[in-house]
Image 1 (cartoon, one colour):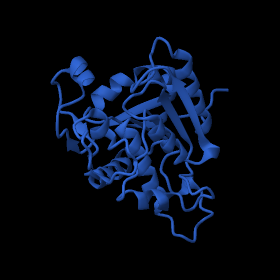
Image 2 (cartoon, helix red, strand yellow):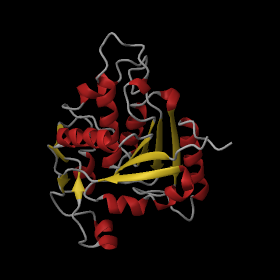
Image 3 (cartoon, one colour):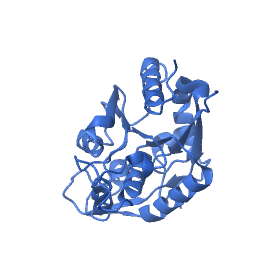
Image 4 (tube, helix red, strand yellow):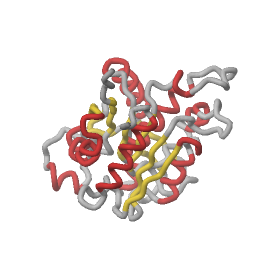
Amino acid sequence: MTRRPLRVLCLHGWRTNSRVLEFQTSALRHAFGSSADFVYVNAPWTASGPVPDVVRLFFGDSGPYYQWWDAQTHSSDSHSYSHSCCGSSNATRLRRYDGFQRSLDCLTSQIDALGPFDVVLGFSQGAAMATLLTAHYLSRSPPSSSSSSFDSLVPYKVCVLVAGFDPETPETLEMLLDGGRASVEGTLDVPSVHVVGTTDTVVTAFKSQKLMQRFASSGRVRFEHDGGHEFPSRVKCRKLYRDIAEHVLSITGQAQT
């Protein structure tokens, strides 16, 4: 019996779009080859401000560009890339994600319409959105169903989070906690792959590590590269991409034999 390719739902980063992410994931798609089909969707909100410089450099004004939310904080750095994408770097400052609920509703509708999916992949703000999406699905289980397995609640098998950050705010915290209530650790009990650049200056090491700890330790794995807030270099990280693809294929039961 021929196995169907994995289906990967891809969530772009802050103030970019599906076309940008398609370019960013070219090396990962090559690593999967014919084993996976990648589906790219846009956030429902158009960019509320200028796009990142690197996006403008390569893609110019060929938008429109989109975002999953606007991060709002009481902070003097409110115009910085890191602030606008992630929120304040100071975890104690109040912040909110304007528009995330509409994005969540949009994504669940797209999954219903375009699925099934085996993998949800997100970059930067898209990785944070994938985390909230996963918490949303897990939080729908009744409190008495502590023995429920994630695969009966979440319509995909693994999250791949590239340059992601923990999306905790006062308004998302309840969803994140409810998503983990069926887990012994109180974490999101879904396999997760975390791809981290060791020189990332947009997402701090604290935010990156906190995102990883949001997921169950038994199912999470971390891949590092020496780049910044970006996908790993296609030239330097071919083995890394192969390792990521092989790990995802093994989780989903599609490993090559």
